[in-house]
Structure formats: structure tokens, C-alpha cells
Image (tube, rainbow, N blue to C red):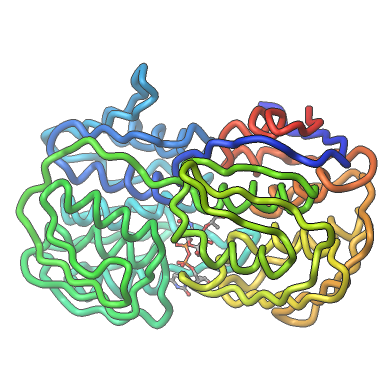
Length: 416
Ligand code: EPZ
């Protein structure tokens, strides 16, 4: 797979872009599908690298998973047990493979998953996931880089999360949905992807209430029956294209979105002077004459998403004034700063804050994508910059953005 993107900047973007299914809903629904009896068919699954790795992991665990001609994904677990250990070589490529902890424990009371190390954006421990597993009756051992979770008998229980972790909430929901008794998750994550997981599990006969609030109640059911389900659109992909319109001074209609999921992003975009109009097909974003500064604090949903922080920094680096960005979710998510500085941005770091002094223009340079969202932000800066930018390690971007080259080209971008 190619690993370099070259972008000639300075073109305002115009046109319509169709948003794909949500990566962060797709990954967890793929894991949850192993708990169902029969063939699950998932629609609107994005064809991105992370999804392909999840499909490979399923196949290695003895679960049939394959794409259909209509681009839907079929998942058929065997009637007997599934391999309880996730394959290390694949699992280490994808942090979300830790979602098999909940799916395997929920399905068969045993799971061996590789302990995901930290990644570029932070240490990312799993203590809350394990706290939930122990509360529901699992014994946990950590040896040789693996989590061994085993439960002779799972039982409903109450779990309070010290932080509304998305992954821990999802894993505990999957552990609890087939566990006898009532389980309650307090201070649960409220992201739209959590609601999508609950709706999916409930479509298969689960009894989950309160998803989308900080109190989720789950009454265990003996069986989940496979179904056909359509995944929600990707709010982070949508946000990225909305900023592409604003940063290039263009006009883009972002189609196939759920506007309520985008409220925090729309609010901040409007503060920077862009206009956002809701239409029948989606959101119409027009870049303003000027880009105005705005202060950002990342928070769990419905706060401003940390997955949009880098893209917003790219926009604010061209604002007429100074903005302060505070990253509250991941302790190491400012790696893009040095790369943006290579393009002429003026940014100073102070602990969890970045002080972004806007500059009239950026210029093309050779830069490196350090993670998925930093990569997307470099694409945005390159679209606005004067001259040519070469983005190395673009593989990070392909992990989470379906057909990004084709979509940007259809909006008039010069990208190869
Ligand atoms: C999910 O990661 C997303 N990934 C991330 O998107 C997203 O940034 C994140 O939620 C926050 O919205 C997927 O859904 C696959 P968390 P997750 O558990 O579940 C701490 C992207 O770019 N924490 O909510 O790993 C943790 O260290 C990716 O698409 C603990 O301390 O995030 C972090 O600081 C990047 N102990 C904070 O909570 C735990 O047991 C939020 O993490 C778990 C988490």
C-alpha cells in the first residue's frame, strides 16, 4: 500500500462528499457479532485498514467473516466455541482488538487478549475494563503481555467508572448483555458509538437501557439472535471534511450525517467564522472570508471530541488571532505541533495546552503523519498551504478514512 500523499494546496474545495460508516462503531459491532447465534450482516461498514484487520482477526479465531457483493459484511461464528485468544501479530496492529475481551467473556466466559501497549497519543491503560470484568465475576491474570480473563459464572453487578471511558463502557456492555441478572454502569461514556452498540445488541434480543446517558442498565438474556444492521455515519470523518471547507475557503455539502452528533463541532466551526447550514441531504459548510480564533477544550461526548482536536488546530493555525487548545482526554496528543511548525505555524505548548498564534498563510513542506487524526490534520493544512506538501507515513490516514483521495479529488483537491 502506498505510504505517501502529495498535495498541491491553495484550491478552495467545492461539491458534495458522502460520509462513510463510523470506524469506531464498526470496530465494536464487528467484535460484538461473535456473541450472536447465526449470520450477522452489517451494512455501511467502512472499507478501511482497521476494519480489514478486525476481519482477519475474526477469521483467525475461527469466525467466518467476509464481504458480500453489496459491500455488506457477513459474520458467522461457529456453533461451538470460538478461539479464546486473539492473534498477537494482528492484535498488536490494532488497539481496538481489546474489544474482544468483552465479546469473548460475554460469549463464552473466557478471553485471552494481548495487553495493548501505549500508543502515540497516550499510555491508554485498561484498568477500568478489568475492574468491570472482575465486578461481573471474572478472574483476571496478566502474564507475558496477555490478559487472561476467566469466569466460571458471570453475574450482574454495579460498576462505577472513574472516567467515562468509551472502550471500558463498550467492553462491560458486551460482558453484561448475556450475563444473568442486572448490571449497571455508572459514569458511563455517552458517545454515539455506545448508543449504536446498544441498539445493535438490542436488535439481537438484548435488554440494554440508558445508552447515551451516564447510567446504563443491562438485564442479561440467554441468547442473542443475529440480525442485519446498518452502522451510523462517521461524525469524525464528517467533521474533517467540514474543516476542509472552512480551511480552504470553499463550500462543501457533507452528506449522510446525523447533525446532532456534530453539534460540538458545528458550534466551534461557527465561532471561527464558517457558516453551517442544515439541509435535507446533510450539512452545507461555507468557509468564511476570515478565520477567527476560538478556544477548544476536549472532553468526553457531548463535549468537543479529542478526535477532532488536531484538525481544529490546523484550522486555528490560520486564524486572525490567538487560540488556546486544552487536551483533557489523552496526555500525548500534540505530536502534530512540530509537523505544523514545519509548514510555518506558530504554536507553543504548555502542559496540556497549545497556544496557537494564527498566521496569514502556511507553506508546503515534507511532513510525517504520527497518528490517524494528526495525519488527517496535515492533509487539511496541506490543502490550505501555498505550494506542495508531501505527507509521509500516510498509512496512518488510510487506517480511518475511506477513499480519502477520491473524495478530496471530487471536491477539486490536487492530491496524488
Ligand atoms: C475510543 O478509544 C476511540 N477508539 C478513540 O478514537 C477516541 O479518541 C476515544 O475513544 C475517546 O473518545 C475507538 O473507539 C476504537 P477511552 P478508547 O477508553 O476507548 C483513559 C480515533 O482516532 N482510560 O475513552 O481507547 C485513557 O487512557 C481513536 O479514532 C483509563 O485511564 O478511549 C484515556 O486517557 C483514537 N483507563 C481516556 O481514559 C481505562 O481502563 C479515554 O480513553 C480506559 C481508559
